Image 1 (cartoon, rainbow over the protein chains, first blue to last red):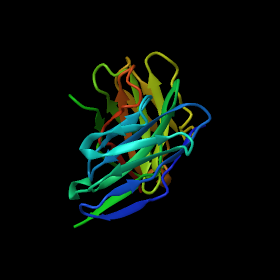
Image 2: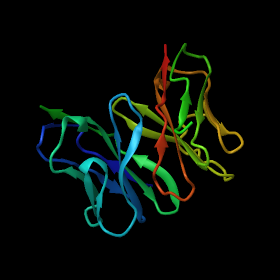
Image 3: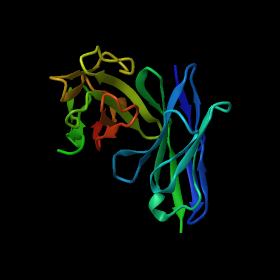
Image 4: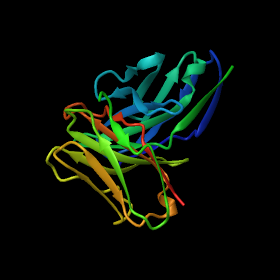
Length: 113
Length: 114
């Protein structure tokens, strides 16, 4: 079975500062990894995904994430955040051949002006 | 419509009553998922439909929960004899058959059980 751990439930960051949201996964087989974002009062949307190839993936709104197989991590980063990045961010994993996505408990990113 | 449509957007019911939640996926999407979102609990997988294959029901929390998908399109999630712990936002998502992982979510149905 697969699982995802997001250790930080809330992350406050000053505007224009860098941010890293942590995600670790557990799986006995190869995985696909995803970050989804949920803006206030909106549905979830895909931010970025890793399926294969380069371990550094870039997504929308200047976010990027790096797949680290040895550390079973897929941390999300942005060099400079804006007020509009205030949202809840969810990491998710699925196994090759099994399209069920397992989500983490989410990290609420709050931008401080 | 262009996106995943869910109804009702809000439902308040009394403990013990049955409720039905509806999901209209994006046209052409063969895969459909139901998740439950509770405060502080993240997204909990409930059930997954893919084409004509048997659904993956491994996430349904009890036999009070059931779901069907008619004609490979619209899906209904039914909760019988609702309990207060069923209060949550129920999210539906769909995707293309060959597009791994990119789920398109609806805005959810917020269920409150009094």
